[in-house]
Image 1 (cartoon, rainbow, N blue to C red):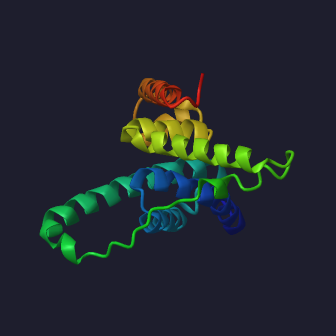
Image 2: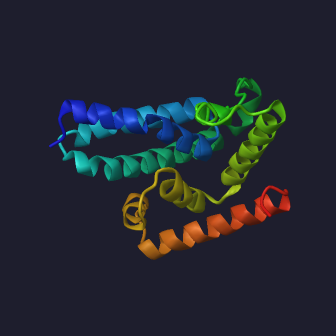
Length: 188
């Protein structure tokens, strides 16, 4: 059984990655924050008594389901209120600072020149755009495997599919990203 402190420590350790993963899926900071908070609450309420070792997979599954639920609600909302779009707020700037996630990366290295820093920011922005352009299942598998560093079996459990499907999704995602980044001159 996870103690209250273990649960708290686990949630603190995954919050930023979970938020980033949600941003990639929903492309809306407020919605991503809501999804992550909702997922954390569900984990604490329904699975807080599980062993600490089981929390990562449970949380990934809850986060995936919460994201799917958000898309379903959006689809329903859009179908019901599609003619009212003129009255909705257009303040969703959608700007997510990629460099924030890597803020400490250059501190441990030598100081970058302004040109290097700008080029790095451009590359990171392009990578983010290409990840967002991936089909949903490929993006989900890619982020779990390479962002969350989950193994194939864990990813399969979290996504509710076979290990073969995870491998296929990841392979296609990597190929699509490499092709897109080569086309933009980022990869040789």
